[in-house]
Amino acid sequence: MNKEVNSYTFNEISEEEYDYKIKLYPTYEFEASSYFKIYEQNQKDRKIFGYFEFSMGGEYRSILCLREYRAKKMNFLWARSAPVWNKKPSRDVEEIFIKQLEKFVRNKSNYFDYIRLRIYHDYDFAKKENVVLSYDKTVVIKLGENLDDTYSKIYKRGRRDLRKAIREAKFRVNDESNISRKDFSDVYKIMEDTKKRHDGFDILSEENYWKFFNSLNDKKSSGYSKLFTVRDENNDVLSWAIVIVYDDFATYYFAASNKKGQQNFGPDLIIAHILDYLQNETKVRSLDLMGIGSEYHPSLKSLNTFKTKFSKDIIDVPIYKEIVIHKSSYYTKLFLSKAKNKFIKM
Image (tube, rainbow, N blue to C red; front, top):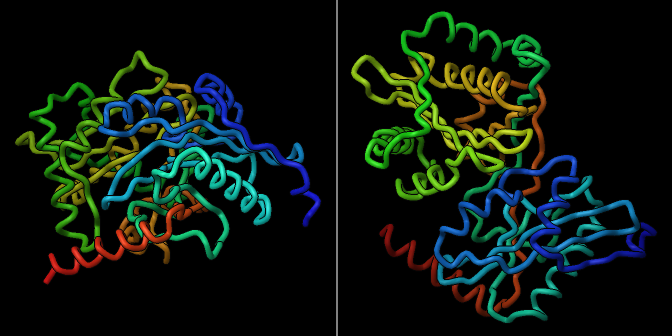
């Protein structure tokens, strides 16, 4: 065994310890933050299973929160955007961590069919059968000391398009973070239009998007959601984006635009407005554009032309995989789910 895996600890920690310690990690995503609990606690049957910390040889550290979920008649645990590591683990270190987590879950409960978490390396025992909303690459815009400095960090094509949108757009960006539930339906229609135009593009229900946005829309919290729109002369929504602001980073979480919006610089205009807002009204230092397409997730490739123009650097993200706990139950339910879907499509 490699020297780096000779000594390790794996412990369950309290919620208070988790909330404090995760802020000590150099980077982590919003879904791994304590703030995400505000959304999850309002969802049916999404209880916290536990908080965990792993350490190996004083060199590698990781932390995660496991929540209970149910889908396709399977009960599973999901570590959203986690584990969070202090640096990318080697294959041996990551495998030790996974095995310790699996052992803990097996000893504590026999209720769950699998554990879903982000994994860097390939293992025969890590499956991808139920993972649909995931990506393995993203683009992050780094903010500078001021807006001009931020623009200078953006890839040339993206910088040109943002300035052209600001200069030539007929419509303006609106902050609609106080939108009503009724009016939110106009926003969702653009997502439905996007699904029709892009084969294989998955969307959630309108209620799901609303609950996500509304539950996080509290500026008194350590984080909050913002909704930006572009509307035309008839007040019809052309483009929109939901942004999550948390601590010193922001996430371009959901966005959509119809053809008229694209023809009138809607997506670029919103990005320009978001950068201006983050630069001048927050302490945010980076904006994650939340995933692009790849061989792993080709259905997202329609996003690449737009998102990659803002940075030359594509950031690798560990993908979600599943650690099977109860094999017979897992594969039986998986078979029945696939058979049902095949029957529905006939």
